[in-house]
Image 1 (tube, protein in one colour):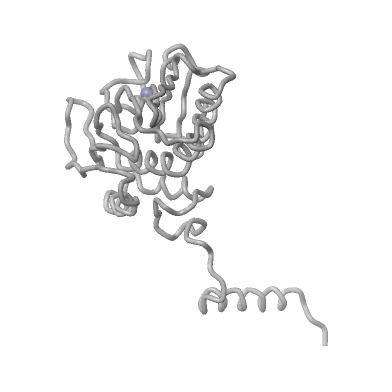
Image 2: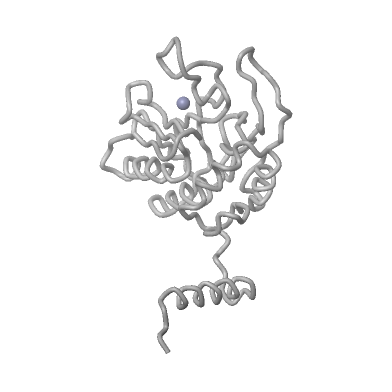
Length: 234
Ligand SMILES: [Zn+2]
């Protein structure tokens, strides 16, 4: 009897199908695009895709935020509102603190809050432990919401800040009080410079737009971490 390739493929497809059905094997949750996002799950290339799908889905996004481990994120969901004419906010929360405190709380789109906690838990704090042997205790930022167009443009596209989809991070304070500033320490060959360089690189996998001192003079003193786009990092 001659076996055709077509029949072999059909048989394989059936066995694979039955395998999933019977759960002989499973795809880990963090690799399965159809599974919800859990903050504690390892980051994979699928994570950013899952994040992007939560932008228009308040319920699913808030459910994902709720999976943040104890102490990882303090926030309050906010009703849709228009703080400044022309810049309505929807699907937003007020972030009070992460594992590290902030100089002040801020309004964030739900996906931005989610990205921040993923970034802090999986990248930023482990990086600080690796380089300095201690966690980050405090993050200084310049704000998230500003009803304006993209920097330097009178006409045209609204900034990510106009919809609270970006945060400008200026400095980190370690548990022992040492301060690491983007303005002062960027480009250094020392531990602080290395930390900032890697912190920016690590942000690229989670935020859609990451801009720093290498982009332009307007970003000499902070990292812009925004949700639009896909891994635009400068
Ligand atoms: Zn910014």
